[in-house]
Length: 56
Image 1 (cartoon, rainbow, N blue to C red):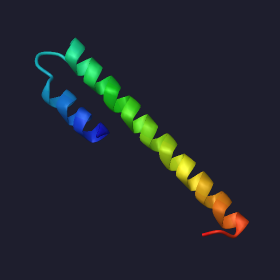
Image 2 (tube, one colour):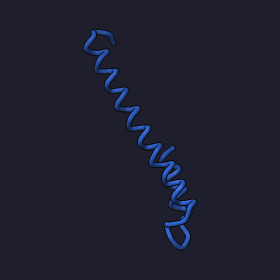
Image 3 (cartoon, one colour):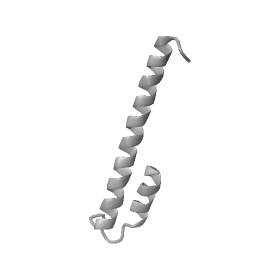
Image 4 (cartoon, rainbow, N blue to C red):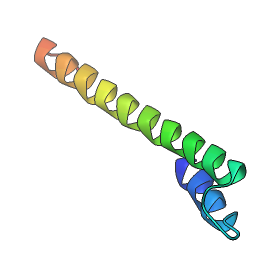
């Protein structure tokens, strides 16, 4: 989804990058990528705890 928002931001550039539409969509993409990274880190952390506890 972050990739989609990033693609839309790139497509919405007209004369300059500094318009509100591009900045807003790029900010949403950044938040989406950040959330995805946090969720992957949480997944790996919980998987590691499950493996250490002996459950699969």
